[in-house]
Image 1: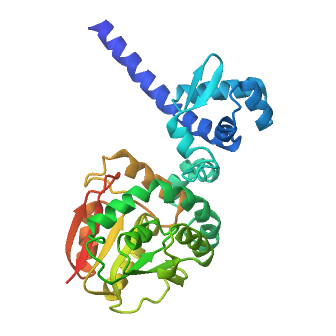
Image 2: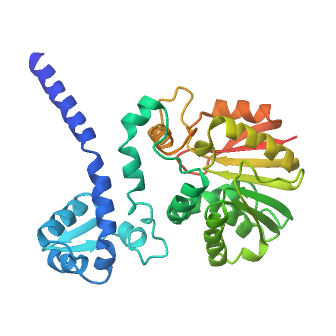
Image 3: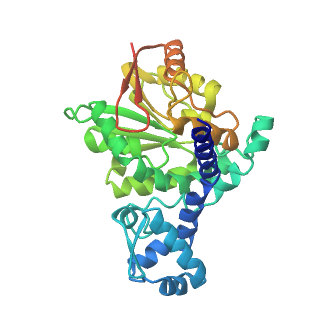
Length: 339
């Protein structure tokens, strides 16, 4: 029994050590992206020496970095030469149309999380990315990655909403749209849909780029400004989209927004909410719980919220029916209907 206890304690400490060192994969990936090693590999530089020369790095450091990436199964290695895995080739080569590394090569989140202890003490962010100046600096980088990571979920949401069931004319409002990924999926599914993209002016400049890529810009209108302040016409829209917005806005702003959206929707109109949703006891899934802390360090009022909280707020705003739809993401979509 005593030996068994010692083994258990050893395993416990190993788990804690691994947990404490779990920052390492993140920093390894960021360093690799900043040094453009995946792009250099795609260009045919497959040895540590060749990669070091291309990246302006030391051969010793590059060899260690590449071995770590192989250990993380982002690269292959054979006979001293490295190769891209299918995952890395598609998503981590900067020249790929599906590159998601734009936000991962940035140190913004790393720097913000380094202040976590102080943020927990004070309950205040080290900087608020939902304020216009910070948002217009941060979000154009973020949304380039999010457009790829959310693309399939957006298409599944459009299907769940029945956007492709015939070419019924519909007016759509995409709130704080970023790249426009959620509205684009609806527009692609329904050629008769007309979408209003709302966001800060500089973010909308990037939105237009994605709309042109998807050949839907001619079916868009634009509503620049802060989502807390822009005027929304009463009874205008069939559908409002809130793609990962509530967590950065927090409770008070989101409840006010739900009321405004209720007025802006036609009778029978719907609002679709995509976000990180923990269970009622806030014990699982892990990602929404971690993301709540991400909102602590990066926003004034942000948090993640359980389905029961959304349900209560939406009903108080006047929505008659609240449902969920599985879109094969970390959390279900919440769909509320105006009576």
